Length: 570
Image 1 (cartoon, rainbow, N blue to C red):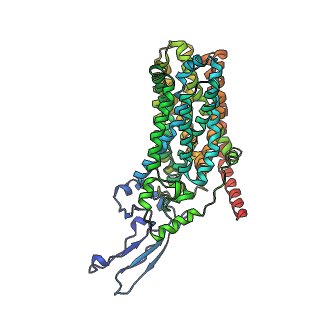
Image 2: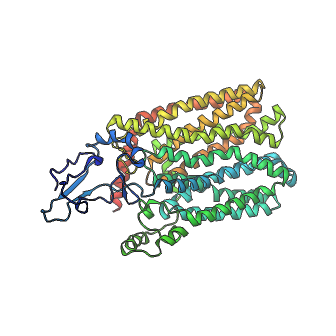
Image 3: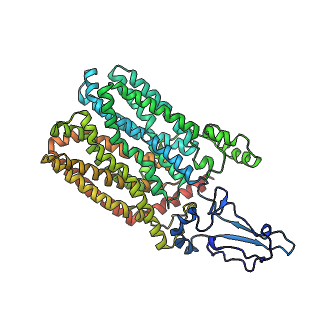
């Protein structure tokens, strides 16, 4: 028998019914809470278990969360002849039913998929002189294949992002990689500049959606309280590509010829596509919800098919819900609507400036290293290693910092935090949580750009520019990732579309920067050119202060307008 019903405000982990000592174990009270925040994989996690301990630092925020959450309980008391006492609790469902191991698997595949777009851009650099000689064209025309690649890298995700947000992540990935593999085969076999130009655009179209889709996958399985860490994992793939690409391209072009670059990408992408088709589960929340709704059709992986081929009646009814969805042709205007919002537009513009700054460094590095230090293609590729190490480490480090700062502000404001349950961020200081981490990283990264230019100007030992490469890779990439997470926080229901808008802005501005950086270096000198780039970042940094002050109000106004639009549509 239960003595006294626990208060609805009692922490969940402390609610334990009191049974008489004579009561046998089979008649212990039965806790019916299929959606309890601490039920993972079908078992109730006890205090002190690993899954519980990792969230101990969140309990202080939960204890003070009575004004932000409600837990409704109904307790049925039976007479002495009852076999059990039952507590029935109406609790919010977990944000995702995926276990941590399954999350790691899907995020790993998403990170690996995100590697292809920047890898295809950077692996191409060492082959440019050989291609120019083979096709008897100028270096300016060859650089147009870089600019066009970046333009399509920005445009294509606007279509794929909307497709992924309505049809699911798997269909968008599968279509993109089929296009990408076909383009690589064509690039390996083509023998004219015109074919090279067109196929590079198609190659970019197929691969460029993967970054937006990867961020969408993280938003599907991770709440805002842990999104920084998971976003760090998924962006580690794209961030290592600027260092890995030139090394691979230099080795392949030098020893096997430039066609080997595209055959390598074909084989790599083919192996990835097989692994993806077999094991990657659908994560799109409009298709599988929190992962509890069985997918169907091409949203189902081979492993899902083997697991769900003998569905129960209840699971079959859940699947029928997804079959009633109506798909429309992807609309890229959704991406443009993100760009014209005051809060998102300012955020995306400044994030694009950060991306353009470090892309200018990467694009000009081969030219400058050859001019100053006499490096060949292979040596230039190896010189990218420090930048790649910094860029790869940045998402891991700043992801942890973002999650720590999010929890700190939540505890201070009395907001409930649970990594498994979504929290209403309407009144949460989201801008402060992200920008408190981004601004110090941005300051150090900007200083590194300034120092980098002058180490090249005075032609110091190669050690100095490479150290600056590492610092720029670490801190500029970290700041860029913080703002990218903030973009996803702004649009949790359409993260792929929001990330596509981020891609569009950064690639278009980055394409312009990469097209003129060598001209700027020749006209202004190395030191003053990079001083100018650092000055641009400093001059526009007040936009982030504007977001801190007015961003919460703009975000709430946008939320109200979207709610009114949805209500009018129904």
